[in-house]
Amino acid sequence: RRSSDLKVLVTGGLGFIGSHTVVELQNEGYEVIVVDNLSNTSLDVLDGIQNITGKVPAFEKLDLREKEKVQDFFKRHHDISGVIHFAASKAVGESVEKPLLYYENNISALVYVLQELQQKPEANFIFSSSCTVYGQAEKMPITENAPVQQPMSPYGNTKKIGEEIIIDVAKVTNINAILLRYFNPIGSHRSAEIGELPIGVPQNLVPFITQTGFGLRKELSVYGDDYPTPDGTAVRDYIHVVDLAKAHVIALQRLLNKKNTTKVETFNLGTGTGSSVLEVIHTFEKVSGKKLPYKIVGRREGDITSAYANTDKANNVLGWKAKSTLEEAMASAWKWEQKIRG
Image 1 (spheres, rainbow, N blue to C red):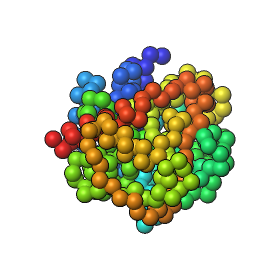
Image 2 (image 1 turned 180 degrees about the vertical axis):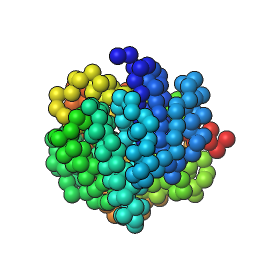
Image 3 (image 1 turned 45 degrees about the vertical axis):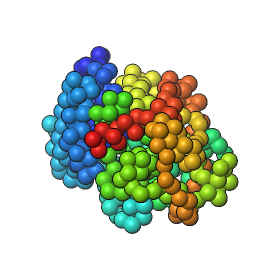
Image 4 (image 1 turned 45 degrees about the horizontal axis):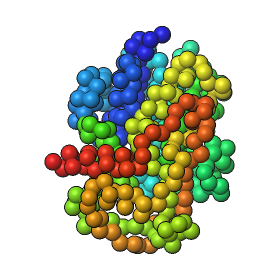
């Protein structure tokens, strides 16, 4: 079947990673329907998607916690060939403060979608998971076989539980699934039509850097310089969001073409390279030509020392590889920040 005959549901499709994935799906000719409750994004993102692809995806404002509305949605859209599930709350700190919000939003929504899919003769499901399921892994780089640890936050726990639910459901239904464990997504589309839009104070390093570069924040706090790493700051694997988005399309095609070897497959998505907080700051300074004011403060509760991916499985089995450099990702993030403040 041609991709133009296939309808793909993207939940949380106006969010940061979701919107970039909608662009890549439309570029490949898929018909996309987006649902989003707009809790952490805005309708303007639809315009950005249209400006890039020349096509506006179908959109429904829907809160997936409302079971009857989810049931009604799937009754009306019984011809969906695949679901890419992003809809979830994602701030680690907030999840510690409001655990029930996270369990309701991230688990109930997943369950209600899967309840509809299990009634279909076949269903393809891509799950937005996270490297947080590994906790502080003992060996770097982290492979998919690394033990899943007790998560350090309710947010991380919702990703771990989400994976377990999908594995259990796939055993007894016609659902085939791929779990994508992201490392740290950054950057934005090169057009600067879409990007990361944190509401309130950013929880992630890169928007905090770009906002500080723009003068919205007085200075950046670097949480800890006493980690056992080359420069003492924490190390993460920062992956360009467009590379990440492309992996979702490849994963979906794998399921549609029945190339998966088990009912549920798992892939790490990262660059395979760890970068320290200071390296990211210096990379931003290089691409922006700005000096970034920062101060070293104490470590943050729940932060791990180091996490970067072994990407062999994604490279060899999925046939996907991250292509963008840290410099390119930071330059795109800076271009986006300047545009939204323009």
